[in-house]
Length: 430
Image 1 (cartoon, rainbow, N blue to C red):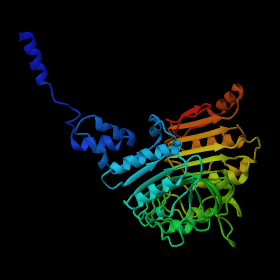
Image 2 (image 1 turned 90 degrees about the vertical axis):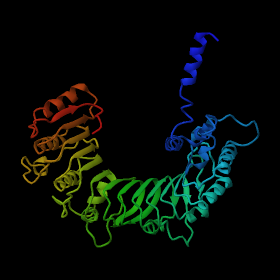
Image 3 (image 1 turned 60 degrees about the horizontal axis):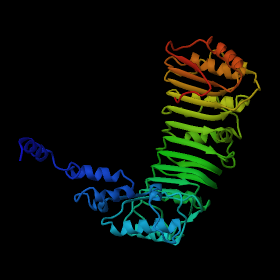
């Protein structure tokens, strides 16, 4: 053997052994946990050490990556083909499946999915996600025996608990997207989940919603509501409500839902709502200058489609910012209006009782340039001593008209020497 060849052999022998095989056990597990199940299964070919390691994972995720596999060349439908693969993977799996996610767009409801849910209910599943797109899936009764559930995320399903169901005692997070359910019993279902902290509902059907959830911290709702009440939510801090129409917020004999709504949210920090909910809040009574309960924890406020051509809506906005002394971020999207109110009595020049000394970021969208809108912007600039940015988005298409608005805005006095005024069509995120 030549000296040259000898040195080459020594170099090869001195190289480190297979790095993939020698990765630490905890790192291998972390890598597998963050892969879609289809890719995790394929890691078996990497080395002997990786072979079937995925079978010990507590989490299985089946998403659209499963659609990338080559067809088997038989007469199975796409749904049957998908479920055949899932069954095969589950049969090889060794340990309890604590987290299971099924979000495949081609999947159709069928009895084989029911068997999957039954299998999971018998294996102590704690986090379950089921998404359907083509047809509504009627959830099997076995779902309601998954009593260890902490997270339940459903899309396009029919949720109908049996009469004997006593709730999910461990549930902390519930997400419904286009889910149908019994409108009369949903409130009692929520109250039977005593540990619920997060509730997300989008595109849900019309129902009466009385919220009794002592641990609830986060609520997002977009859909159709008949009536809505917060009865026991002492920890609710983040609220986003976007009903499709006005909602009944107070019972017979009550004059307004405004005081009742905010009085039931003692730790409110983040609030988002639209025109329909604002109209519901101010219905049935006059809007006070200030709420009886100061919103001392409210930091972020976002209001959508608010019309400054309607007196009640202007008064509501003023009432809310008056009652929120620690507000840091405020976003309001105007509903275009050419109506000008008599602004002298609505927005006074001094507003001595208004304090916005924590406000840093403001965005005012879809500004039409009416006098009352401009006076409101002037008020915000004059009462915000540490304001950093005020973004104004005119709704006017003509560049000359937008320039006229900007010329008026730059003349307004600013309490904050650092306040930056930005006028553009699409304001940056604040």
